[in-house]
Figure 1 (cartoon, rainbow, N blue to C red):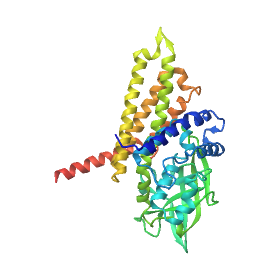
Figure 2: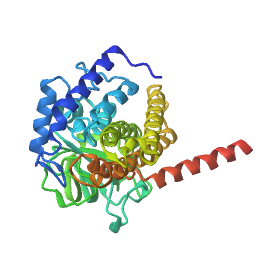
Figure 3: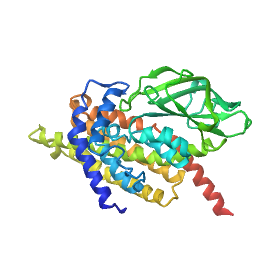
Length: 394
């Protein structure tokens, strides 16, 4: 088991109490729409967390982070409600964006862009994925169509982006584009931009199966966006490398939050099965139901162990794409089965809005796509297996 400090344990306990007692009652608030909670509601929830000293609870007051193993526990507790990570300001894409800027940003970027995010005064968006109809980058970043080129002391960016979470209402944007100056084989560049900007236009906000993230998921047109040279994140041509700095830990924090979501679904389904009577006994006493909940308990523990294993590796500074792909694939697929069994346990009630289990099922289904579909991660792992085999033959 990973080491969890008393300080982190206390924070996690406070987060759990806050989410259960103060945040969960908002789950049926009319401001929770098909494109996520409104900014009005998100601000109200963040204010509650701020009052209780639980805004970005995985970051200490001095700016230092808890270990990834400790963060796993804290974010898991925030996930006991789909609104919990929003209230605590640890939801994607903000959590991953804050991590990236903390790792790569210079003093100016940290003061101008990171500080308002950590303070809970700004949401952010990560502009990477591109529309499939354009042949743009998705799981394959080499297909990136968005370009950037120098013009005096500015970079000019043009392109389209898709599935950009939280773009509507965001104040900070991280835009990744391929540099024309570096040639067709050159790398990508990342830029920090203030939002809204007239050069970044929301074409539409997509209607998707999930509804937990403020601003939803948008298709974006970027037309002659001018960004001062000092707002480039890190060095030119290193954008894809920086994306991996962000994505590998972000896959793991996704797992942390959604584990909390699945645990909440299990709680609700268990309560239902223990109260509901059918054919002369409680539902849980029927093996067809009781065994589903038993399997869920096994699977939830397995997911927790997988997350803890990867968190310890990340704390050692040696987490690679192999481990993060394994964790993301296993946890996403396993939690989907957990959520599905919860719906099945509850029968007709499980597919209604009378409880939050129906939404939790939809949210976890989408998680199988977030940060790379399962099949892409398995493909990457298969390539690694083949490469290792070849090396073993030398």
